Image 1 (cartoon, helix red, strand yellow):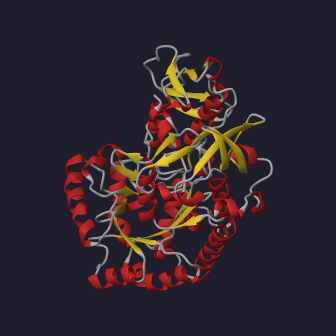
Image 2 (cartoon, rainbow, N blue to C red):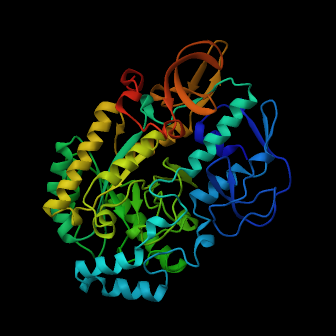
Length: 485
């Protein structure tokens, strides 16, 4: 029950030891830990709630704090797994899909979809998804429940060490405060033909994005088109097989399609995958051979399949790295919410940055051809460029996110006689950070020098989101020299 916490922070095993104080009840459900961490799983205090409610049992009083040993009324590994893999969705609704939860309705929709005018599809989807932002869990517009769970555990770890800061391997390379990727799902022939112009736009703002291409039936994917993307430094990934909404309808058909999808990884020189409409079943992912997936939203209220992984950081599903979608899709913003403002996107970026997470954007070339939508996308790129230039957010590609997260997962924090050090392949870009408690709130800092293992002078403090909730994140809150070295 310590594995998920240690993997999240990449801290030493000696940081803290969590254990179960009592036997867990057999039933799984919702309960609360701390002020705002809504958990789903088993607990030992009582039978948790079968349905989510704003008034949940808070189990914090059952925590037992000892010297570097912490008794918990739940298993953090189980809670993190349940949230990341969306095990809670069956308890939220009778079905865990929005549009087309009924298999017959969904089949009829996708059968008629090619003949439906775009404005008619928008009406159907808007009716179906109306009020989705008011769903109480996951928390709109960004849910950091998994991250807050680990932050609460880190607070307990520091308390169990009599306030001594806990060293860990920072989340991003070179001390970057957060990361950002831009991805493009190409749905139609019209969208494919707009890709060269979209690449020009991305290049104008200094971004190399990834293009997810549908291999069969939707449009032709020529070798010349693949070569152009590669020549210009953009990334290619596989986007479903047919994009017909049926990839996960039954196991037998899924296995057939998964085999063909795996074959396109080599043809496209791709390492990643995203399913059509973000449909997913993480329990079946062992059939895939891609290195990373980008099909799980952070909050799925406006998507065809509800749920959400409740984290703004990548995580492993078996051997596959899940890179969650953390920002509302362009289609949902334009045609479900009816907005062409970047206000929501900027708010989500602020919340993700405050939690040192990954800003992961989906913009479809199919939906930004018109001037109004295109101008909105350009304003988003300008904002992301500002975060990169002024706050030193790491702007990169999904493949590089995958490479770094795998590198970080293989690094170890070692206590030397005088200072901590990082060992493992790729350690040169890794940074040691320290988790502190300041007035009961969690803050991070980088080392400037160390006098003994586990202790050091504080560098520039890095606040977590709970420390910034009343002030917001201002550009002056982060010292560029500390982030960029």
